[in-house]
Image (cartoon, rainbow, N blue to C red):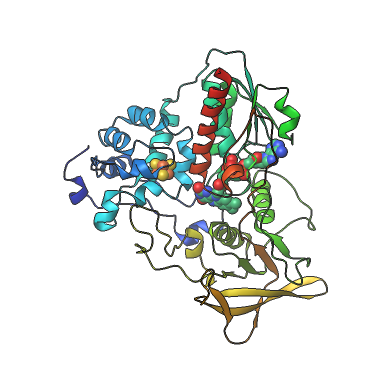
Amino acid sequence: MGKQTAFLDVPRQEAGYRPIHDRIHDFGEVEQTLNTGDRRRQASRCMDCGVPFCHWACPLGNKAPEWNDALSKGDWELAYRLLSSTNPFPEFTGRICPALCEKACVLNLYDHQPTTNRENEAAITEMAFQEGFIDMHLPERNGKRVAVIGGGPAGLAAAHDLNLMGYAVTVFEKNEAAGGLLRYGIPNFKLNKEIIDRRIKLLDQEGIEFRYNEEVAPEAVAGEFDAVVLAMGTPQARDLNVPGRELKGVHFALEMLAQQNRVLAGAEFTKEERVTAAGKNVLVIGGGDTGSDCIGTSHRQGALSVTQIEIMPRPAEGPDDPKNPWPHFPRTFKTTSSHEEGCLRRWNINTLEFVSEEGCVTGVRVQEIDWQPNPKGGRPLMVEKGEPEVIKAELVLLAMGFLKPEHPQYPENVFICGDAASGTSLVVRAMASGKQAALLVDEYLKL
Ligand SMILES: Cc1cc2nc3c(=O)[nH]c(=O)nc-3n(C[C@H](O)[C@H](O)[C@H](O)COP(=O)(O)OP(=O)(O)OC[C@H]3O[C@@H](n4cnc5c(N)ncnc54)[C@H](O)[C@@H]3O)c2cc1C
Ligand code: SF4
């Protein structure tokens, strides 16, 4: 514990985002950093609670009190060792984790000023890379081979742990590079892709074999390898089957987000292939995080206007949700950096049809609704309010989540993890699930 009264004397300080006028024209990371003195002061606010709820809330079982203590004392190397003992890639979670731990922090219950764990995590990891605290592990091989299908956070976490246990690991990735949604979903303004490249280079040097542009089925490799970890994510986005879905200008969110990340990595697309918001009114259907990433991307591409609609009601204003109390993650109203950049947000809006001119979408007919209690119990009833209206849009992005994959009965040496097992979730949960799969593989192969 850095200083016993720091949680009373030192207010929570976030590094904040770059000013909107500065960030809106580029895809550089929006989040700023604190200087090392302020960062250490922030770490000193951790109270080393008798029952650390942050530890309970983090799917990776973080040791935040321990690494915050080391950081507050200026021992960055120890802080990194403690952090990386549970988290294989803290440079990812330090940037894009919704910080379940901070919501469960006792200081959040006390006055809504939790410790800045996520930012501390990113700062510790960047210092570790800068100062060379990251050791290269070259474990002795145990003679067994494991295939990992999918190079997203779940597959990478499984590969990392299995490699450390001595297995010869091959990661099969259908894309041209590893990272899964970290690389081809999450925009660069939240996570710079050099951060992924830096880690993949290390994993490669530690002996993990990466095979890109190889889409494989578990059954195809289950005989060749001693075990298989299936970490293929949730490939199928939820569709909106209303009239006009086939029109030019109606796309799944990932068609735009993945393409934009590829363009930033140097890929080229023809004018016909390009999904861009430049000079267009954009409508994002879906009020979640993927929708928010579409908003930030649309701004940077030069959209004329951006509107986001959601069929569900507006969430309760934060910071607490009585239906969902501390230490659980509150499902309250959230404003992201992309929302701050400008966007009309509407709730209780149902989509009726896409309208068009000459085969191109020009707008979306929508209906305001109300959710009323169902007298028979169960799902509330959707009741129409007022007249339908048309929202002008030359680009419509569908950001309504992903379907949970269904899996056949695989051979017994196949272990499923990440979003492929749970349905769409979070990077930190995918990593925790990948680590769990590695343990199960080890248990199975040691029998
Ligand atoms: C736009 C967007 C933004 C998000 N933002 C956040 C965020 O800010 N914070 C957060 O915590 N979570 C976020 N998420 C959720 C998070 O990205 C996922 O929960 C996480 O990436 C799941 O990891 P995964 O490894 O299970 O799957 P994925 O990341 O989907 O990786 C699966 C990998 O498997 C590969 N693959 C699939 N089939 C095969 C095959 N047959 N052969 C070989 N390879 C295959 C895919 O190409 C992919 O690389 C976001 C999701 C989206 C869509
Ligand atoms: S991974 Fe997320 S929940 Fe866990 S310590 Fe880091 S920010 Fe908190």
